[in-house]
Length: 277
Image 1 (cartoon, one colour):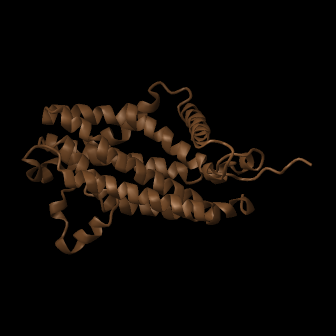
Image 2: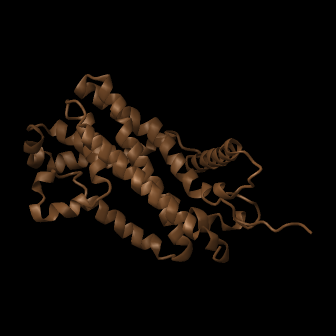
Image 3: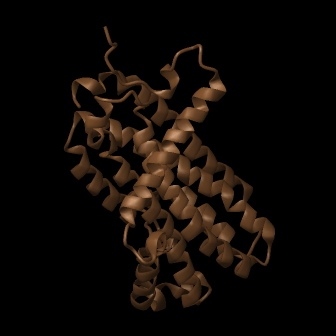
């Protein structure tokens, strides 16, 4: 009798298969799905993945035109510095919201496939994150590297960008895993997450300087998981000074801790997915 197909994750493959082979198979599936995601998303597009830069650039120009003169005093009286600060925050926020929002319905949307083929269920949200990471690496990151080199004149600062960016990727992967798992159980999560993204944007000092936030509300901003990462990237990219090690470590550490929580949560609930797909 043919054995029925069930959901398996990378951690539940047969023990006879070596760990290296397990990871290789897992990586191959993620890579294949990520490529399919990008091809589907930008089929027929002229600019392709570089459209990801359109939103932060357009919003940077808009905020600079509206708020540049009012907030320039907090940026050495330079509207250009204000614009660069906005771009850094908007680019990171745009990546986080876009990648995690796209990962949210990935498991439910692949329910039919999961019922037919044995696949590690976590490849679906992580492949969406991987596609957006590739987009970030090709599109936004070179732009940030150019800004960093122009302002700091230091290759060390350019290399240091990798630390908070890794923190950002881990944080995004954590939310992708958690939200995609919750969406299997509660379809309202999609609408709640839209509200969460709006609150996250408003509590991130992106288009306004942190100095304008009342002291009694700054602890609220401190709860924002992206605030530390944005601050670290700005410190490296536009301050013109050597990177502050504590900011880098905090941004990386927060991303790592979030990813650990995301993995534990995902593993604790994934066994119940098949009953709901």
